[in-house]
Length: 538
Image (cartoon, rainbow, N blue to C red; front, side, top):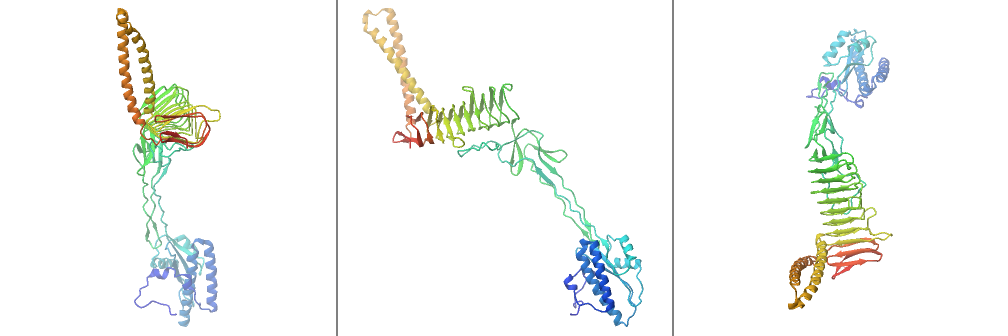
């Protein structure tokens, strides 16, 4: 096929210099003996150059083929021109990315003139190769003769910069306070999903962007780099950029959480270690996090959540507006360990404690404790047992087991707000006591009245006093009876409250509304509830 320019197509200088691909270069070469010697020399030069510059292997290989084609054309011209002299020539070749240029000296033909170094440099200039010229390399190679392939220019590669980076030192937890559990279990084996942090602690490390440097190819064309980008710093409430812009710092003690993809701190009281009798009384507004154990009669009150990451012993702990969580359990002292929470109380073990919760209680085991809550008591994980305890739940009690092999006695009340059955029992007892006093007063009053006109002044005065006392007690009896009637009306309302357990050991006293039942046998798969005005076990 005849090679050349298509009509109307312009071919630039660099289109001739940039490789066309080794496949297009391979063709049947002129096979005269002088040319074969040149081809062998070029093959040897190609091998040597590839060994010296392996990263430029493809460029050198393509240049070698281009040189062989040029040699063939030169020899053909010399032969067609009746072996007229032909001057030595400089040949150049650009890598595909134009970051490297290679040169080669072709020998003169038929006694033609040599080429000087100055002419070689001029040819290099006229070919548009004008940056990164390897003058020492050229001068050294120029003196080594013809048919050698060597680099003549190297571009300056662009130096990529580094974008800014943020290294986060804490987990991205979304909660800034304890969540009230909707389910029946809490995994106390996991860490509390709150992250306490002290003022001055680094939340993130910040690496500023590092600018890159533009490069230049051998033709003098700039190779631009992408501008480095600053890191987005997740700075939220109560955090500040410090340490010379290289860190995001906590600006307050509190709980670290993530909101709108930013680290924020909910400012609150943090106590790193234990609390004992030396701390005495603590009153705070907001949430409280204690990293250790609480014991020794400490008195704690907070308006928000209270998290104790250790154990709770002899202490009083009150959350007036949140949840209390004791991560390692309550091991109290009878009459001296009290917990009161507006919402939930959570602890794996509740032993020898008096606990009041506005909503619910979640535990793995409850022993020798008194529990009052407005919702449900869940003892569904771990041992799941309730032993020797008094529990009042506004809704239900769900557990795996009540009692143990050693026996014992538990009392439970479900289905109504705890204060209603409590008040009902109290009023019944008080009414019975008042009725007893009324009856006791009636006997001396009757005896004195029977005396008629024989009654003495002293006895008359005593009779009046007894009659007045009886009248007062009768009024009190009427008030108590009216109050009791209202409570009984509430207790007569149908309740969905129940006690569910897989196994029940005696003894268990159950109260649901006005009904009570004493269970003295071992039962399994219990679902204790009211049906047809009777307490049913199944």
